[in-house]
Image (cartoon, rainbow over all chains, first blue to last red; front, side, top):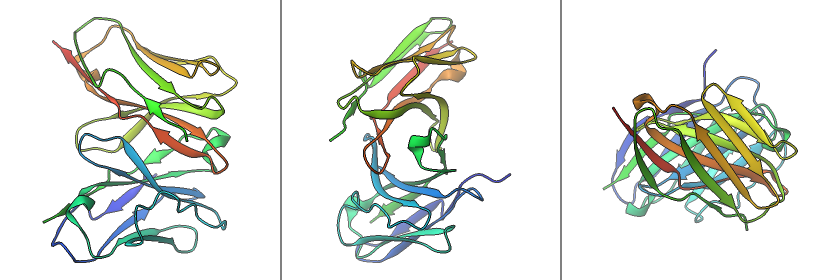
Length: 116
Length: 112
């Protein structure tokens, strides 16, 4: 079966433009996570969706960042008015249930964003 | 706030050596701990998951241990190979929303 799929795999955008990053989780996985990985840094939590519950948005760095998950499946991370410091790899992951249940979390290969 | 630390940031060893990668976390109230591998330009692959009630997990040449009370975990790699060269990340699940908090990783290089 397919793993977590992310698109685009690479995106170069001009400062000030909006970008949308897409994540297709593994079919049937109810938990979906977005993380950001900057050069030389660890993974920074952005947002977490679990089923129909309200998402945990506590990691979003500013109001320029938003995410939604339609129909409990595909998720889109939107960055408005991009800044150079937004350049990073954006990683999506999914899990059958909440991570505390002990289910392995599966990562996509990331969307590499460069803001010039 | 949970913080995960992995030291050193990089490690270089000759092929065949047994090695230990360390991970520490500040809040011992975790649900589980996972070790991941990341190859350059790739996503993360889960290697081992240890539940909070467990002490260790083994998979092939890999053995991960967990001492929850002291906030430490180790990943033991036996008979290292050049193909083991990658970045190894430790992550703990904790908090009301079972958030996964990562360390910055240890970049391992195994020299032939």
